[in-house]
Length: 198
Image 1 (cartoon, rainbow, N blue to C red):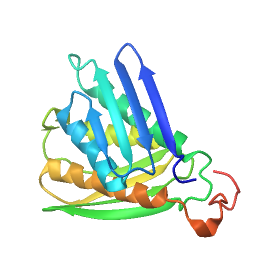
Image 2 (cartoon, rainbow, N blue to C red):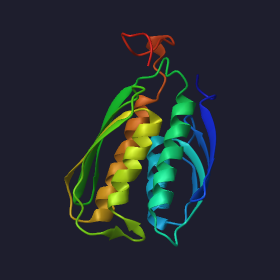
Image 3 (cartoon, rainbow, N blue to C red):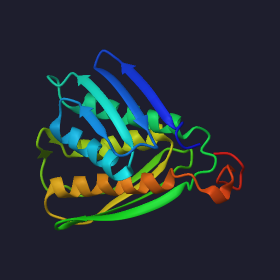
Image 4 (spheres, helix red, strand yellow):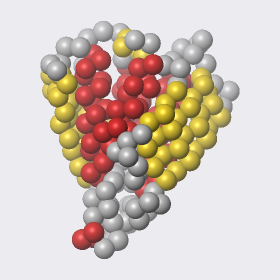
């Protein structure tokens, strides 16, 4: 399984043009350019702490606002993750991580269940983190969970600075993805479900 878990996705609409390459068995390299600096930073956290290689180029209608770009980046990232996981046989499947960043503390639990769902308990202090409206961090996570066909629970346990809170969430997500997507040799390639299919 290791070494072949890659995906390449392109999405072109009247609102966005996105190209993404993902390698679940990478080394944490990220080349991200979305036109939204904070969004780049958050995707880089997933790659670095998930030990996933991500190459992402996105051009969106930022003159309208950031919504379409953030949403479509989340959708494409989820699609790539889903494709790279294949039938999900032999993986750990579920994992969680709790990550501090200065005063902020975030926890993320995921289940690569084949079903997309997100529960987000994140309170923001302001309206924006740099160029990124804070409510779109939640939308990014919803889009990723939906297309990645995973259950995602994220909670910020403490924090004041929105940058710290958002970054802690993405680092925790990366760490949880690293573990949940990892091949478990003891499964001997079997699907991690009593149903026999995810």
